[in-house]
Image (cartoon, rainbow, N blue to C red):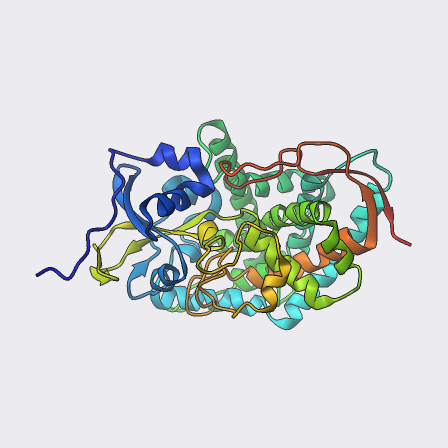
Length: 419
């Protein structure tokens, strides 16, 4: 008698177009229709497994069962991740390089990041006070670009800031795009990798000397397990793996502004200076609004889980958005309620806006601490330090476009400092 169960299966030749049409809801819709947290489908012409929920996240981040190398489609590598970056590594190579990323996230490093972020917000507010209207998403992207470069030890000329801001944005905005938008992201990555690569060569030649604890310095001189320096291209990819994610925090900051506007009762609580409530508010923004839809891995070797057979080499997607909206984990998951985090148990597998599992040993995003610290500063400005008006506009956001950004990009006007 077989000890395996028949996995629910989506009929049809290929469902890649359905994934593109349904975006963040693709996996969640089928989890509901199959009444199952796991199902089989076909994507990019191959068999794939999709799953979500806390238990699914626990097995997905088991490095004995899944690997990341070659899991991401080439179009995503060419825009979002870059070749040979930490996201594509497994085993001891991944652990060793991940430790380098985590060393950058030290308390002193995060304190410096907070200071830089505040300074950039101050500069931006002074500028916004003179503007008839502010397109928040675009302006915050520039704040994040400047912050990322300064923190990473990357010197950038003033006339290059807007170009780099657009290029970093194109990398994550084009990850799921096809046609011209995909090529915008691909060309943007090529430009930035070339620039950072030249900068790394200049560091190694002694022509540029960034501070020792910065990303640029550390990856210019990082050595792998064999004691070799990274090749220039890979070192550039890893420096960009700090710059690009910080630029992408602009998406969360836009949703902070949206939440502050849509939930005025929450804004009143924020003005009290209660740091605990601010932390809960930020976590709820990260849970409630769409960011990454899912993450991919390949089955490392045959295994059986909950009676379902996983065959070596099978593409597997973990539903991040759906797990953050799973009614088995979250009460009233489609209601914005920061207070839910007052009693959250802190599981690394139930709350996974930027991936799950362990920071040091697993594939949970190394930049999650950075994201939270930057969001804290940004929330303080949007809720406490400035006043502004939100004119009539289209504040809706798509659950199909990945990443999702409010259609109007959140326009504000009459920006003034709060007295």
